Image (cartoon, rainbow, N blue to C red; front, side, top):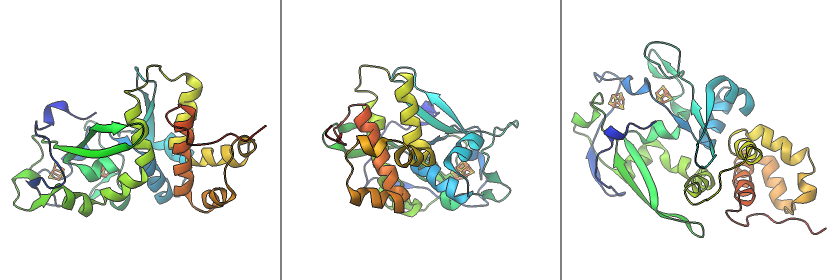
Length: 254
Ligand code: SF4
Ligand code: SF4
């Protein structure tokens, strides 16, 4: 979980400036990759399972655990930690991050945190984002001289692509505070499969009666077959429909 004590009480926007630099050789190098709970987004899982040439199911089984938020019943996926004294990330190696090019969104954001709650509604989704610093005592990067705006940091770390890919899931994430009822087990399972286990979701769509029930255009079906990211966007629409967040899909006329 995010260390609440490390959140600097200052609301930031894309133009906010800060000084920070992280590099191999800094005294705290790799200390942020220990004893940390990293929540994985759907696109994180997609990138990592491709990197390891695994199915999403294999990746989830080997590297993750599920946390069901008690109030909403929404399922979230977290990266396992190694069973050592320092509870290191499983992807930490001698030189640093062994999956650097495909590291999760949380690692890309760090030391910035994101708070979008203020400008979110079911019609328009996330329309304005706010940020905050995560200033942990062990992180010496803030003592460095390199200056950034939040926008420059996001670009440098490749965060924009991840946020874009996860847009539908991030919208779902914020609906958990708006729903009065907790998800039942059936919906939890459907949410989990659609958002995190994309290979199982593909089988569900193409190897069940799904396409006899839902009215999906030939063009969208073709795109989903050719492009896994398209399938992921469709999965987010399916969960929004299932949770009655938005009428994102249509049923076929009987
Ligand atoms: S994925 Fe990489 S950057 Fe993120 S905690 Fe693990 S080793 Fe560190
Ligand atoms: S603790 Fe901060 S400066 Fe040190 S390696 Fe991690 S992100 Fe970089």
